[in-house]
Image (cartoon, rainbow, N blue to C red; front, side):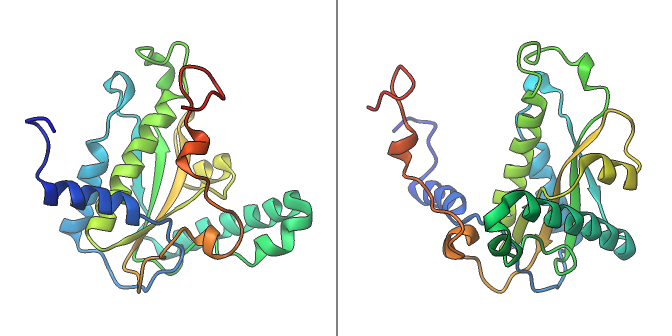
Length: 216
């Protein structure tokens, strides 16, 4: 243990938030107080970013009709995804993939425009802008869990269609529709595990030493 470590209780709280974070699809309406929403967005804004480019842009969707149009785009992609899944299409269509019309808040997380001018850390890995935005989303997710709020990341949409709907400038790209708000309960395990869609793999199966595929 180093001198810079948190206390035992503080460490336990951090690890609990990580362990209990869930990709939520079931919401119970309600609201998110403005000061809480601000805290969550400040947490997102404190994420690390390559070259300190801070590529994240968040759009709060307060217009209910616009929210409905976003849900329509998600439904269109849900059907396309089911078709692409072939023999698993029926099982997929039984899954609840979003809570856009049920949650208290909808946020769209997007990558900024004019990203090509940011070279620091991106010359060989331009996708680090997406990694940076993902860190911001994860910060928001963990902060939401600490506040007792659920959050779900919806990626079932055609990016350009959503960009056009929200009047994003050329070059900007939406990465996530985030459903946020009170929930009756957090899933005891990832929803896709509970629904029998997929199984989690143990860490040791994904951990190598020195070379790919070489276990410790």
